[in-house]
Image 1 (cartoon, rainbow, N blue to C red):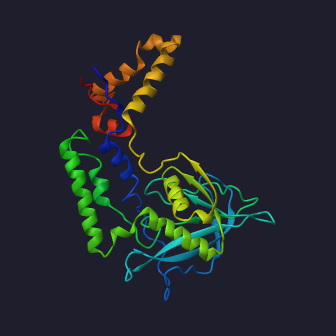
Image 2: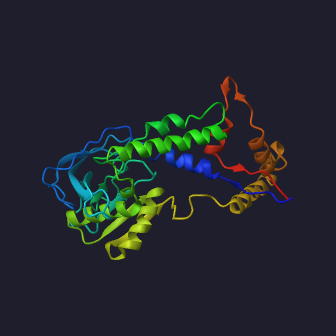
Image 3: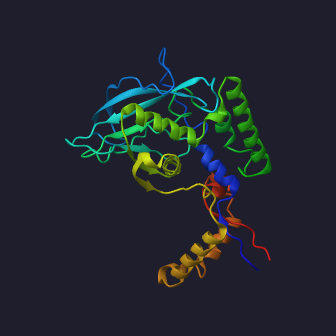
Length: 310
């Protein structure tokens, strides 16, 4: 009998990603396309304030609005607006700026705001993500409602059908409102960053990226290698690796099980850690104390074993 891998199911992963994707932002758009603006225009930066998330420290910053096409593949595409914020370097001889790229996908690139690192030698720049921070927000309340599931199982056929229908409803509503969904891609985000770089007058930039932002950084470097000085990635997620590999995860869990077997306290609780995890995943309790347990939601948020087969 060959044990299949412990993996994030494709549906589970999609749900996790999309929980932070379309519909992630419920805030109204805070920027608009300036009168008379053309594609690539960046308004003169004006004084604003930057306060990192969870910090009492505040920085003097500069804020402006970048105007870009919604879909650069179409000559008659409408224009959308994105916020831009820059914190100036504190040193007297700054080098290449740091462009920050938040994770997600679907999280704001303007907040919760990270610490403005590298200010001694670098300007710190944030450019809003299209579809999240700009004049067009891809808000999907239909998906927010559907992600609670149907009945007692988020991964039941009924829940999955309802979830798929919610996405179709949201897409149809956005398109009826004039949104060109084909314009909301990573290469378009990269083009926005390039427009901001040029508008701010930088020859090259450093990229500081996190999770989904590392994918943007990789594609940025691929499309515009001469514009990247250095790229620091945290929680790297390259294209093609959103879904974890079953065999790799199995091997990791077997390794943890071996470590557990060598530890007196751990081995006293289970003779086989990996098999215990598989058993629990297939035999989830209906409730914990007075709280009901939805097995689909548990499996969405954790790795899980597939049924073994010969």
